[in-house]
Length: 152
Ligand SMILES: [Zn+2]
Image 1 (cartoon, rainbow, N blue to C red):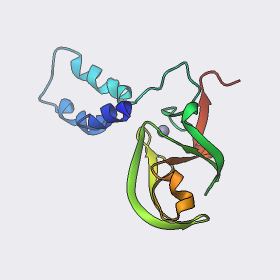
Image 2 (image 1 turned 120 degrees about the vertical axis):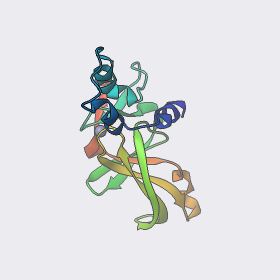
Image 3 (image 1 turned 135 degrees about the vertical axis):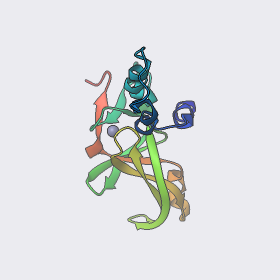
Image 4 (image 1 turned 180 degrees about the horizontal axis):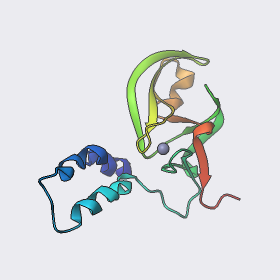
């Protein structure tokens, strides 16, 4: 999505970007460098606040819109897991082939871009035709999510 693209196109991670500002011989009169360092939160993508959303339980970064939820009937290593059509603030590890309950799949671990916690996995490829609907979709374990915005 456009959100993810904007997020990924930032040239540098906030932790490494701040290094050059902290050199002792560079003593600026303005407070600009401090402002830059505290802006790290803007690296997060935000979902519209009018929607019910799921957030990272560890850092509260938005993860997915409720409208993107496909199924609640998945099983992760730590219990219940949800299948989403799209997610935000999520990074992806290398894909590898794994034999799951529903057959052989190529999957990649996904993690929160904000706090780096592993959240679940992405289905890169399904080898059985009955499982093709999962390709390109994301699994997030319920243990890593919290509901935000307008949930009763
Ligand atoms: Zn997080």
